[in-house]
Image (cartoon, rainbow, N blue to C red):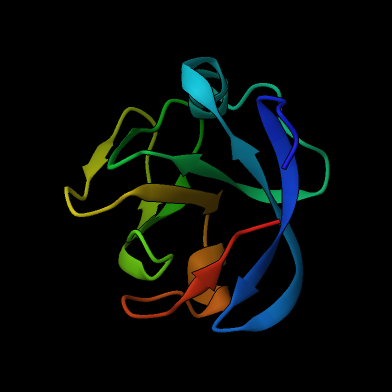
Length: 117
């Protein structure tokens, strides 16, 4: 993984590759830009936020999947509206996705994701 604040990484669900990529955000500035919907990565279907157990959505409705330390989905929050706060204290990271995408991808608690480059 590069040392940049963000990079695109492939999304694998339950061990299976998808044709989708997510942006990987690091540091407080990367998180802030992602929450505001700025600095978007072309081709990314969402943003993976490290060390994150709560999200304040500031831009448009999104789906948010909270992940455990091993990358397994713990909680899915669908259609999170702007200015809405969602929390999952057991999560170690969060994956924000375009609205409705979590359902289309079959994300639900217990589904393992692989977000490593």
